[in-house]
Length: 332
Image (cartoon, rainbow, N blue to C red; front, side):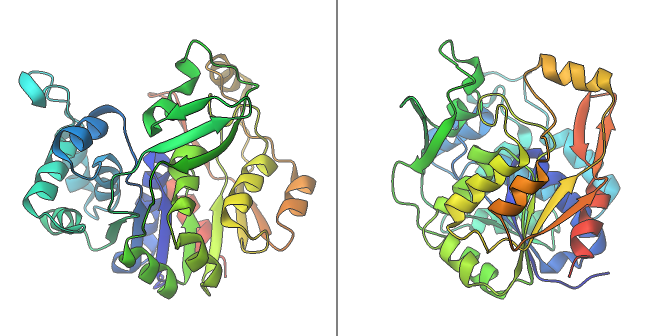
């Protein structure tokens, strides 16, 4: 069992699979998961706007991922994902897990005490900290000058009638100032390893670097910084992106091409049938252009490993949580 002070940044299923692996091989009480507070879609977005609470979706995923008892996790996953479709009124369609989070946030108002209450309720030893405690709206601007307001609209940009995959996202920003949660800056300062999880680049990963003080704390930290490349591109966000395109973006927002210590790349191939299904959905395997990557992050060590698994029942490609965690933890 490793005893490294680990800080992770991310959101969505990529963050889930990373944390789900790390808890098995590193002391969970030394893991700190940083989550975004700018989610505006689905149940999270509704609860955020209707009740004025932090969006609970990514916190819920982290709570699930960090449950150490597999039986508890299985039961909680079914309960948390229950959409309350048999109810009427404002509760209808909400994830029950989101509702628990929102209610605790309402009961324990002030800072992020609602998140800590969830951790206590489900006996989560790892820490889960919102990146920012204020209400934020994420905005993306495309190369042609189209503004897309809100995380949900950016996330589903490919469904817009005017969507043009050649019109790339040029930049993102918050509509208002984003002050860092002081606990985030303290976690970065004392970390041994800082990991950017796989995830939606413009909505789950890069926005963390827009929070005031975060990139400065990262650059000042003595911790090793790891960037895990996505397996697939995402329609509307990273259409046609190669590995170096991902690195160019994180280097731009981090502000230092020499600050990444490791880039972790999946080199496991997928069969042509699975590839063709994903291609029909507008997704492609991220092409690893190694020479260009080395020029973008000249001081980073590039680590290639078989990190992927295919969930046939759900038709999903995902990172293998145990392989991913072992790869990161065994790097010095």
